[in-house]
Length: 184
Image 1: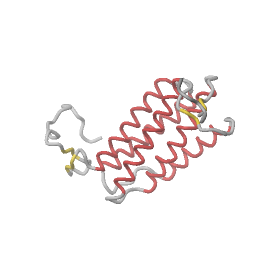
Image 2: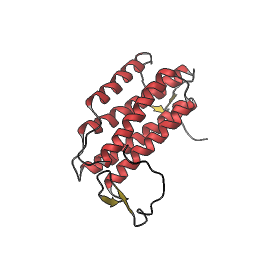
Image 3: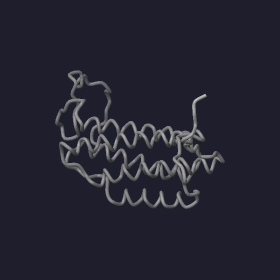
Image 4: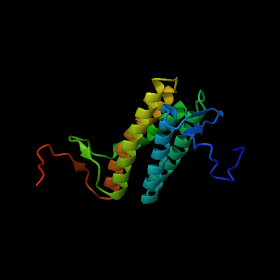
């Protein structure tokens, strides 16, 4: 990091624009900034998951994910750069396969909930899906990395499996959708 921020406010965004890593100024409502914000929000929600979890293996996976998401934010801030590599996707797939091995097969849809950490994982999963949609919306206007799209797609799958795994390790059942449930 070449320049350290010693002054947090600059007033340069008061006109509704923000600076990208290449120095270009764009509207804060642009699809690129929307994608950057969604990835940042996802990373923040993963921080909540990390703060609620005490599973060392999962914490190591989540730490790697948070760093990769920061790279993805950098990639979005520097148009044309590709910082998320195929190895990042493979890392998620390996973690997903390993975690999924110990889970019972699903026969019903799973509702968010169970343990607190599982519920936070489900929240992160839904934010991840939004980040993926924002990245795809950007891709309708500009060239984006296919690898980054795959990364977010696979990450949402991993977060779903991780939520189930957290419920299992915390001895909480998954909350299964009951199509005949009626409000009382």
